[in-house]
Image (cartoon, rainbow, N blue to C red; front, side):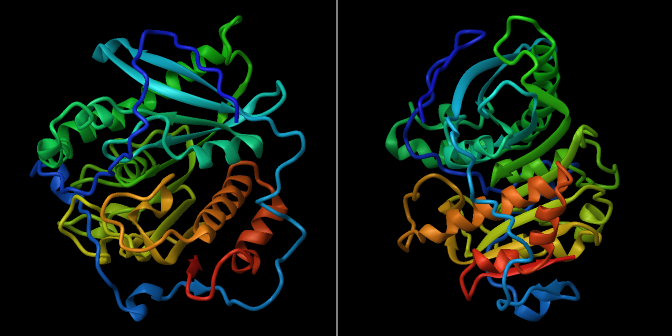
Amino acid sequence: MQGHPTTELPVSCASAARPLDWRARVLDPFLFRRLGFALGVLSLAAFWGGARTIGAEGPAASAYDPLSVPAPAEVKYDDFTVRDQARSRDIPIRAYLPPGASPAPVVIFSHGLGGTREGCAYLGRHWAARGYAAVVIQHPGSDDSVWKDAPLMERMAAMKGAASAANFLLRVKDVPAVLDQLEAWNRTEGHKLFRRLDTSIIGMSGHSFGAVTTQAVSGQSFAGRGAVYADQRIKAAIAFSPSSPRLGDAAAAFGSVKIPWMLMTGTKDVAVIGDADAASRLNVFPNLPAGRKYELVLYDAEHSAFADRALPGDSKARNPNHHRAVLALSTAFWDACLRGDAAARSWLDGDGPRSVLEEKDRWQRK
């Protein structure tokens, strides 16, 4: 892919070093003690619960193919900086735009701890090739600035310190600030995003700390205060490496989610930072209300499976099919839930997912 970066305000280039994602606990006792980062093993009985599981046999429900890319599909990106005047905060973003000039539905991605807008480019490229404007937000304070200039022996402490309630709040406020600016740029003649975005159709996604961010702005409730960070413009959400509250009632946190959610994790989804077990990740889905809710658990997938590259400490070679499955299922989800594509819905709710999954991968919906 050929990139053509531009900036609205001066920003430094993001580092190409490997980002580490956030899994440390959030400590504020009032709001954030409910956020947990558990990683371990949950029994199949608890995992499957009463939701419908999809069998491995049978062909896809239709000829719909979420991995196909129309030709030509030249995907380009532009870099911008959103200025949030209310917080005197600059937020770097990267926008992958589909071919053509028509307004495209918008899909936001939030990176994990220590990441940048350069991360998870495989998602941005594919989603854009499928007709979406994929916008990756970089969150100052929990991006690569945390570790890239720190001495090697101090980087882990710096990362743990950045996994904070303060950065959580910064992140959840970054999302509406970016959406507001995208809407403004979409109306601004002469801007590169002028009339390129369909801001009436918005999806939200993120990995690790970005999944926590995604859950918060997409309907998770906090400490009896309700979904205080939810942005009503978001129509569907995908959480890669999700988390349920470490303390408190998961049913209260997730039971009122009103929009479609897709969750993706792995049987070895353990982050470098964190002291939890996999029950937290797998406890989100059972506590979501029925209706267009999906969960994928990739066999042997580690925390880095959803990122561009392996992370320090990974114990297994990466499985190339994991990215294939992630791209297929996420694309079908966007097509079905954002575009209302009947073929995508039939593929997603039928045997389509098993056509891209391996035997030990687990998939369920409700």
